[in-house]
Length: 376
Image 1 (cartoon, one colour):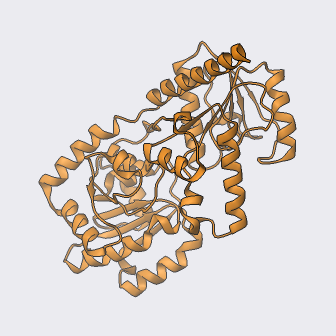
Image 2 (spheres, rainbow, N blue to C red):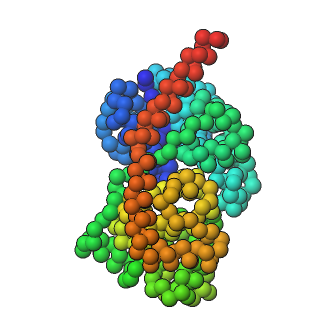
């Protein structure tokens, strides 16, 4: 089979990691297929060499008229048997079967993430078009599948759940000068609770700050480290931290390079995930893979991903979430159990498994096209 993957958003955080890891796993798992990788200009080096593949980087802007004209031409020219778009975008004219990945419908479920009504209408139109045009839909959690059905009215039989994998880069980093250097650069000087993620209201940074105040009030000596790009939210979060009296104990680390993340996870005392909406919840698995206890919200996909390996608490209730943080911080036996369960749980999620299941979806999409042709 000649498979094309539209990877033009591979430079984006989140979806870019999904594209890179899944593509490299596909090349390894099924080298018998031929692959056309459609990359952004300058992105040719982002996918490691391997398998029978060709890379092209056409100057096609996302959601443009030109891509509607040029993508079908590219697919025909390269005699492609199947197109997979790992982001919700498909050409209106499709010369071959298509598979699309819809990771979630966050902007429909969480309107505050996209306050513009026009923006939400455009987003819904693009998502609905991709869901309608695709022969098969992949999503990353059972929760996301239910939300796609609820918000877009898609036939659930058309949607296949393929859990994302976890990069092998995330594993325990023992104490060392290199690990201590990562902490020193961030101004971390004592035991700390870690949270990583971009700033969105649904991520609930504010709820974590309120729980952290309760934790300190109960005599726990710790810092809170908030890692991730929070540019537009930083002034508000710093103001709230000052109001709560925790600003001197809170480190806003900002963007942390991928090379430093395993050290930052591994040195933490507890990982906290107070998020109110996640389509999958990568960071919970990353923390587990690095060997630290996880305290998590029980919202949306998080119980599905964390299994029985996290301590769940309501992040809307500062006292409840703080009590769970205190237990994971102080209770040695509980910490050992959570770490052991975390190692076991994160092994359920591998890119090898994701690639195998994705290839099976490709085959079902191709078989569906054959069936259509027979009965046409």
